[in-house]
Image (cartoon, rainbow, N blue to C red):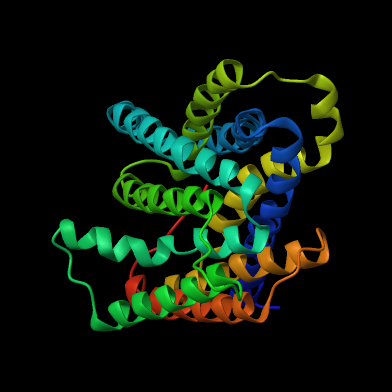
Length: 305
């Protein structure tokens, strides 16, 4: 097996971990409360990255790299980490709260719309948006209608769907902030900082709005460990390794399978049924997401925490 094939498989594993995380989040959030689950999860994600960072730093110092340059970039690293952490906190908690009121499959597909929202935000940043992206947006809107209508006579868009859409918007800002800071700093270190910032803010919200129950936490230890260790920590590292020697467009295409896997996970693990309308809507949205990624990210790499 050559390196490119191996790394493509790592990216598929990344998409699988992220996709099944929707199932873990749905189970965990309902039992413990969204802030409790998300706060502990993100802090676990930060802790998992520490050994990796320590190993890399030791290797970096042994190679005799310039420490003055490191000190100069420290401020940028901290700034990027804090901004990413705040945005991730908003996005992650809206997504987690939305999962209480909507299905895993619908949440996965709605979250994946960030890939379409990014070019729209880009217009305000004076970045040109190809005509193909606008076609994808229209297709995604049609898919969203089919997904949320669910065969009823009225448009079905509950508060959980709205929360997840808000999350998708902030995930879009998160991608743009990462795109700005990643060339300037160590991506893994910035991710670690963002997890701790997000975790600390969310834990504060946990004590304000929820009553953490150790007994309830004990019942969701597996989903919590999965979402924290695997989804936050391991998957991010696999993404970094996997994108080496794989074209960015191909990497994004592989990782977009996250939304499909989330729907499959909801069906197989949670027994959540999908109507013909919802299935067709998912197909339209997924097709639009895949089509949009190819031109939009042909020269860029993206990362999701």
